[in-house]
Image (cartoon, rainbow, N blue to C red; front, side, top):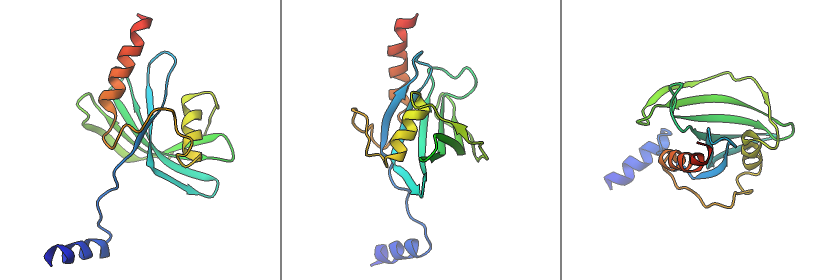
Length: 155
């Protein structure tokens, strides 16, 4: 009985656990300097603008960030996007920065990582890459390993 009361109280006050993420690999840069994932469950459409959460992993943290998670607005009618929330992680996946930002609208080229992110988010996650979901955990280790394995050919 108590658990039903607590569940009802949490729902009444809007306190509910965050939905689990569903990360999909989207693209990797040509020089293996970044790999990008989108949380399919985070995608929300509002007219011609859609939002989604993007997770980008870098092969090292030379500039201080090993990975970045951003909440992005994507204009599905015009090829542009902007960041509205940014969270940066270090090598241990500890949060180094977490804040809302007032990003400028940037033009998105179709044949780029940002273009593929835009395509996936604007499709509502139905235009899925061939690879299956990476699951609910941040794909940091998978992204790091993939970048290092693929980048070996450049050395």
